[in-house]
Image (tube, rainbow, N blue to C red; front, top):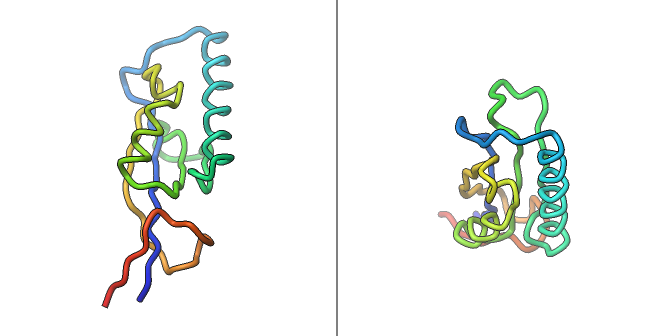
Length: 112
């Protein structure tokens, strides 16, 4: 069986996130959204976006990347909200049947 590997990112609000003014939060959110758009445009991210109605309010967003764990972590170091300490990332590998999300997964594996 052939499997595609993608990298999944959970964005969480840490308990010690800095408190910012409304204007600072709005500016940071615009920068964060522009960063996410660049990740999609560059082909690194398949999808990314915020959550609503989640039982754990600390979980703020999810992304699926075509890059390795290490590369995804490196890329996300550039996210303005991560740099500002408003979000932290949880990064892990997600396997699915080959071709499920199209072409260009982070990796492909064969399992007996």
